[in-house]
Image 1 (cartoon, rainbow, N blue to C red):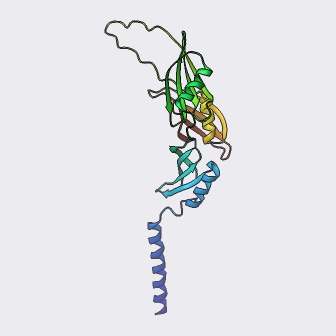
Image 2: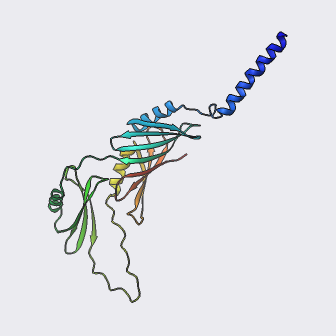
Length: 238
């Protein structure tokens, strides 16, 4: 009788173990816990963890830094950061009025101010100035009034279009210079810049900044919008 009773207990134990395996198949495959993934994000990027969720393959960690709110995807199997997305950019409060930005631009470059526009996402003013032979686009910090970047174009008399020909459209102007894109990339990730590439698009284009991360020794490609100056994506190489 005791023999059958012992066999019954063994069967029950194995049944419970099998049920747990089928209900929680990824437990053994995960090399990091959700808490460990969150700690890794804090060490890599700083800031405060806002939210953390799980999917079948990834931990989704939302965290906030001084420059914005980000969402990172952590591979549950190996603990690697698979992607980093900017959810909301946070900039310093605007200190300069439009008139003060106009005065700062006039003091920096001679000519006639044709247009001035406040770019909220970058907390800066875009000012277009024309002289007799060229036009310039100035990026003026709305916090300090400093000239952050200057783009220059020669003014040309437009040629008369050929009959039945469609007018050509000029490409959007870049506000962020290559050096400016590198500076923004280094705010997102601490590392060494390997290569910078500009890609032209209909909305102004973007920079691709390849960097070696000093913390993880992995290579990442950071996408910086050439007009808004925001970090669009961060892709990590395997």
